[in-house]
Length: 60
Image 1 (spheres, rainbow, N blue to C red):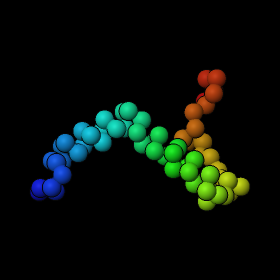
Image 2: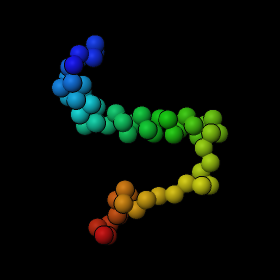
Image 3: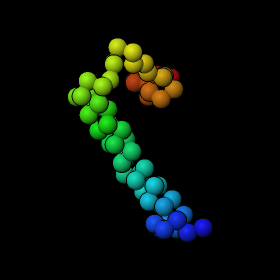
């Protein structure tokens, strides 16, 4: 199926390259920073999921 903007494998390769380059993490941080600057985030209701936070100092 032709999508008009490259083959599926080309899109997949680009997405993979962007992931490896940290593009999504940088974009996520930029969006959070802008939303925080605009006062659009209520950090008093934020929480962390320990599954996604690395343990410090070799703790498990």
